[in-house]
Length: 494
Image 1 (cartoon, rainbow, N blue to C red):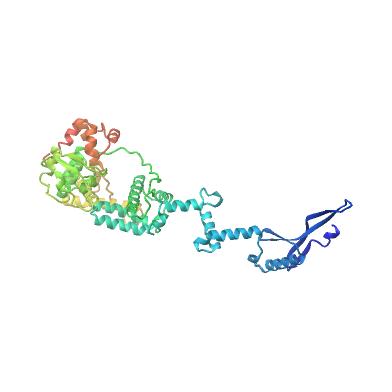
Image 2: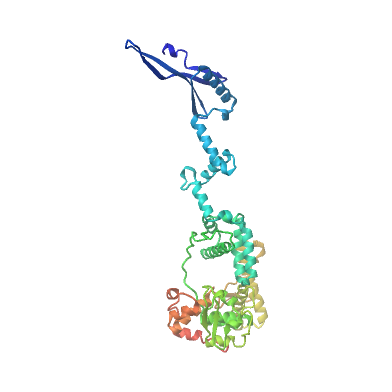
């Protein structure tokens, strides 16, 4: 080290902190004398240098005493933890002034603005973010999301049900809303605008039901989001369920009733249930459409039924012809006005009807078996009572398998009846032909027999409110013309 730099760097310390002062030559002055000799005179400055907050701070001074004072002050600040009091470089000062001017219109302190921006940046994925916070906010403002009311999903569900009920929506659809939306509001007790398609998709996947029920829930949730957009609670471009994929339903063959089976139900049904069964079997209306049907839409004299758009599944009006045998079933039961189906719960009525039909078929077989056995003590009432005990034992066994009851509640010596099987009081098994109810089979039967009768798929598609492609795929050639003749020949007399 030269003599001029001897004693440098100087170290100023406080506690465990040390700040160094370097002597640095930053300029050389040259002077030419009269004799031609060049004389040099160097110019020095004193650089204070130290580390704090993982960065190096440096500052130049022309005077050594000023440099020492700055070094001592910096060391004291670092040692006392007053890092905010550390001196800024010129670049730091310019950056601070620019930042303060930028946030001035907000009226917020600079540190708060910085913290909020950092939080936004992290929420978008940090270094892996595909968009900037500014882009997200601009899109938010463009869609008017900041103007939307803060509506919780449970409140919106309740409002939809209330307004639909006030608007005269039929009870069956109100029940659908209750079945699918009540669990939704329990799962999402949060603002509407915070729910994403991914959350809805995950919610549907976890439902403990089949694919068909999941798709029904998906459609109902879609209707709910549409209602919320109409109320101004969601933006118009809200994707709803568009990005939620449908669930693949297993392909199953359709089931239809035979003429013998539908006779059993029509023969043993309550009087009020006959229009529902007859219109489903011989006009092909969907169960929900029949439940919404009013007698003033059944034009028996002109032999057609009007399915209005607001009552049809496809939301399009259609005219369905009344066949001769359907006219015979409705003749003594038609009214000028009022609901065709007087029951709030048709499925419950169908369940009871199925039990009545099964009981009647079992009793016929039991009477025949008792007569063959020659036991005069087995009267019809005794046979019926024992058959019902067998059915009760079967239901108890089913409940036992499902874990609903304990083994002690089931009498092990009692026979267990199943569809197509019952027992005489001496526990002799008796078989009979069962007649179970088949879901949607009335409509499926009508379409199948009607296609066989008229041999005109587009015509039947128009009557049934279905697509010709669907009928070609599932209904064509299931039955023959002679079967169709028998089907549409079923009347109260036959």
